[in-house]
Length: 314
Ligand code: ADP
Ligand code: MG
Image 1 (cartoon, rainbow, N blue to C red):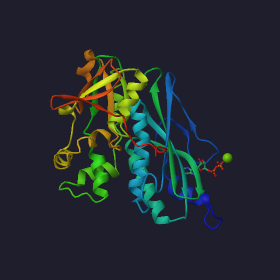
Image 2: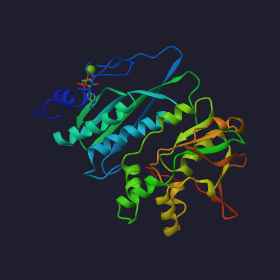
Image 3: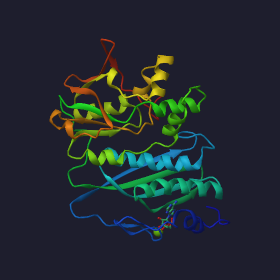
Image 4: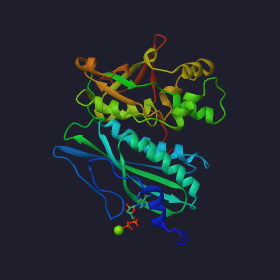
């Protein structure tokens, strides 16, 4: 950071002014490390996600949305394992010091952080191309975290919420015309992590993942790690009215199954536990022995390739 603007002043003004509120934080921003108190019998769940300008977001994206999404995607990873978020660190690389940008970024960050009593406990501030990284920390009772590897043949497959709204939101942001654009755009710019759902699934779900790259790709990870296959039922895929309209007009029925950024949870449950599943979730298919992902649609069974967004694919 240039000497003209004090790095410490920046941190103090935009990131250190909120007092830690989570009981786990014993020391927040200001020393060489933060200190966290891990209660006896708990494990610390740790995840990190980076967003790079030009790769994950367009130049001039609203900084409030950026901060929200950066935090939301990290909290979503904690949610998918049934961990309760407690704290985050923030590494931020800035091309210039733009005070109004920083103000809006920090207000977007703290607005979501406070909803979950998550403390910003440290980070790093450097100059360079705009790059934003959050590391999120959460607590989960030892041995209870939901993993990708626990799905068994005969388990039922569920998703929280609806699929494809964020994918439609991206299309709208790129110029697609659609009557009800507000919800898809909101879901694309400001996804909500399904933290409560993840916590509610502890001791119920046999496997769980958050849908960041698209259902087919993310469910594909559960299938790989659990060494099983799956068959979905198109009729049962939960779609908002906007996405239903999109599918009808475009015939692009794969979009809700392959588009990323929904940040819903996809999980599997043994049949004897399905009564315990939150009402906001829908059953969409079943785990089978035969490897691969299939979907029943109009009386036919089709194979779906587990394709999602990959950074190093051509
Ligand atoms: P050090 O050089 O010892 O790593 P820094 O000068 O980078 O420490 O940071 C001073 C304090 O400010 C530390 O507690 C660090 O975690 C915190 N900090 C730095 N940048 C950020 C940021 N972007 N967000 C939150 N905390 C930050
Ligand atoms: Mg130091």
